[in-house]
View 1 (cartoon, rainbow, N blue to C red):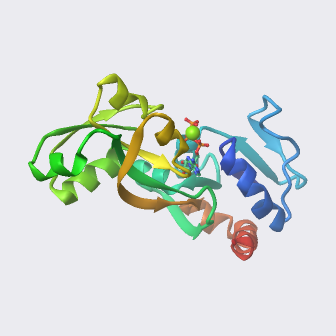
View 2: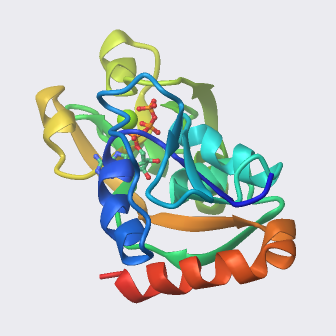
Length: 213
Ligand code: ATP
Ligand code: MG
């Protein structure tokens, strides 16, 4: 495919990416929240945006179906990063990955006595590494959403999830018991495209870099 294809997810990443693209002189022709189109043109005839699930962005870029993409560190760690060049932390979609448990559950005591814990999460790779490094025995239970429900429904003792304000945890009587890492979104570039389309991609990457807050 000639020109540039950029993979973005709807919602916060699309919203927070708009100013960065604008700095590179790229303005999407439509709002993906209002349009059902999955391929959106821009003011530049040679640049288009494909709208995909947040967790699918690295896959599109890895296989070269998109040249550029923007994905959360959480998503990139689960994907593994194969075939991706990750030149820029964009400092957008900021939150943190944490362990949360019901307010009445003494997580620290359970860890101290070496209890085996059931942990529900969408982030299996990050959770596995975190608990292995701490020497905590866990059974990881893969979920695709609404992790907060798991301890309330008796599926798990604790969860690993993303938190920003903490309002969702609070509304479900959960507390953050451990912080794992800070999360923000990164620009990802297909490694082969960066070589073959360098003249086209490099100015866009440089303009985005200049617009990072
Ligand atoms: P989907 O909603 O399609 O299941 P998702 O939850 O991964 O997928 P988004 O909610 O758009 O998609 O989140 C995209 C990225 O934004 C996440 O990968 C993460 O890096 C970041 N993010 C998630 N939740 C928050 C939050 N509450 N505040 C700030 N950034 C967040
Ligand atoms: Mg979400």
